[in-house]
Length: 393
Image (cartoon, rainbow, N blue to C red; front, side):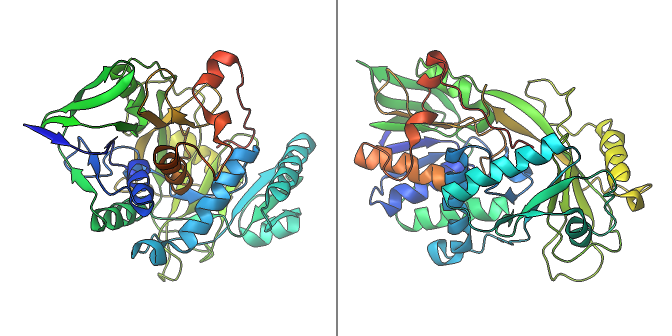
């Protein structure tokens, strides 16, 4: 049996859900989300840290964050769902003058792009924000109050729910086997539930984006990379609104578990970009990572020495990495009707509102009006126009 849809979105995670929301918001209601999992969020979305920040080093990332964070602040109004946005802030600290200078240079770019709430902070202020943090080797830091936390699954459900209210459909447990292209134009998608005739296909397949792109004859430089999160059992003395705390020297970072105001002692969620991690589809949690991250935690917060790990909340997920750690958003060269929303390199959840808007504009209006999206096109790699991001964690 052959179905039809104006737009088929491959991947039902937070990015695909945002594309569906923004398409239906723009009046394109015949949208079909195809998700191979038994339910949404089984890929990277449900395993994400849940952080959102505008403290990036490139203008495009900063502007995508500004739009997205403002959207999260009014998410309930826009979708009818609570996304759990808490502006607890992000605190980056430096342990050398060179790192501190880089943080301050990034702040100047952020201010120029329209971020108003980012400030340089001294060591005494850092100690007040995060009691117990060892600060004797610090040179300073930067803090932005509007950065914070969201619930990634709640964001996905909110986008999907409102899109479905407007007519979008969701097929779960549906695999994609082929994308039909004739005369350089997408014409159909072959799935385990049958063939879907369509004029537009959105690749929102996360870490599996390169596999989906090859179905349309497109080579995509997106590779999966495992990142792991270690949760601790409750510890005392954690401020209710502890910011996300990031060591600019090696990317070690931590945040409080649970929502502010929940009461009682809470645990922490610890992470660190292990330089020994290698690309590949490994999304199982490796217990050998625990002592590595705990050593860094105790070295920075001495009271965490001997802290107990909560394995029920510890997890691993896949980043979808590109060579320059920036997303690939736009129309695929050489294949009309095939659109890319891939390669977020750890920023897919936080940038999902901006991504959905860009892709929806491209499909409905033929061009992206809200952002300078041309620099995120796939063709930048062949042309050598890579974008350098210095604020990575």
